[in-house]
Length: 139
Image (spheres, rainbow, N blue to C red):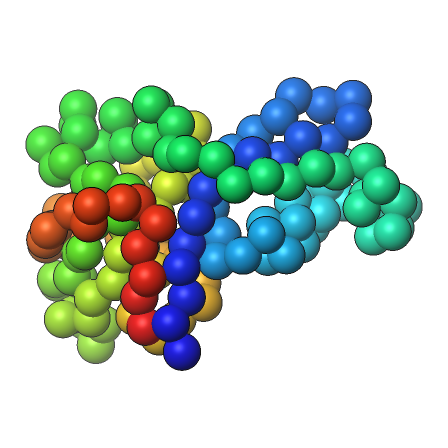
């Protein structure tokens, strides 16, 4: 099954908006709800649905990989193909780099055929071609 990962702007009444990456609007909403419930555990999903708006958005100018670039000399781009190296039984598996959030020390990759990202040390990633758009299908 092929999934497209996109970036979504999440706005929850009374809170600053944030950007997240997910395979669908529904998955972005569910992940945001899970995070919201860590702070407000009594919140029900229906209530969250009323106070949350989620829209597709472009990858922000700050793509979250500045730390990786500065400290490891690795330049991941959202939507770029990447393969795992020196990762034991996962070595050779490939996928797509996704938006990690505001800052990260690892490269976030959705491996082909998976629905969840993995975090990989920057030195254990072989980067390939960048797609023409960061909304890249994989599968």
